[in-house]
Amino acid sequence: MKSYSVSVNGKVFQVDVQENQGGMAVKAAPMIAAAAPMAAPAAPKAAPAPAAPKPAAPAAPAAGGGAGTVEAPMPGKILSISVKVGDTVPHNGVLCILEAMKMENEICAPVAGTVTGIHVAVGDTVDTSTLLFTIG
Image 1 (cartoon, rainbow, N blue to C red):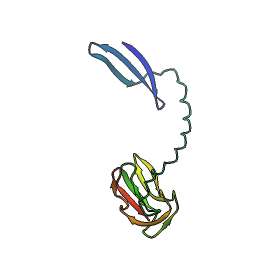
Image 2: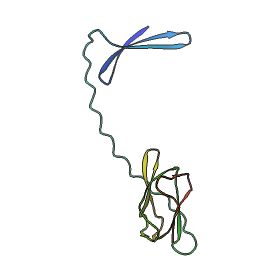
Image 3: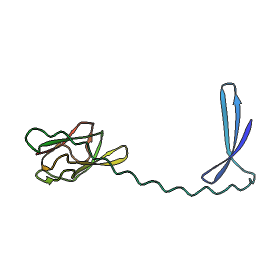
Image 4: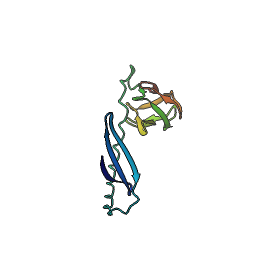
């Protein structure tokens, strides 16, 4: 049997590891006896700034000039919609926010134009390739 002292969130545990025929068995208990003070845990490193979400891949423009469709690039939930039918949007203008895997992703216009259709509502859950917007 091997015995280890382990510190978790500033609390010291005595861990005994015993090898059995079927594998390892571990017992852990808080240390009761005064142990040598352990070094304070290092200050946590600052988390890196999250990468800017990638806009949706531009959909191929439909026939008829600047017309286009915007489909969901991944499954997720619509958190907000930034436009309404009749709004003019620039190329790469934000249309909505799609939450996927606890990340908020901006879904942007693949072409400049006028929003001619909104096919989702706030709170909707969408699958990959679900039609979100039509831009004419």
